[in-house]
Length: 141
Image 1: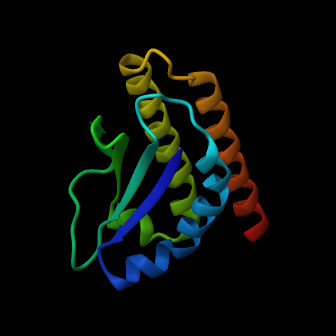
Image 2: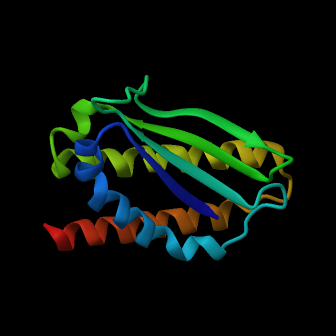
């Protein structure tokens, strides 16, 4: 149900975020088959990583959008330069905090909009995915 996309603002931000992005994809892969809503088929988190070429305004979760006709909900997760330039020790805790916030925002919105939304399953699955992410981060240290 949760998908990730990434737009890096420059080659350096792309390199700095590659490992964290790959860990997110692996950790959340089991969630792709989880269906918790009759209103949407997917929830997308779009990482917008500011850099020398593209500067994204804001920090963290921005612009939650529900597209009923296309059956998805999406949110931008803006990563400022001062986060990724500090390295993986700052990137990974930022990712966990912001993905948690994004999933909470998805849950709140879908609970309001979709009477059949299974929040318990959604919350359990994204929490398990974040646990897998944290374990992999710990194994890479």
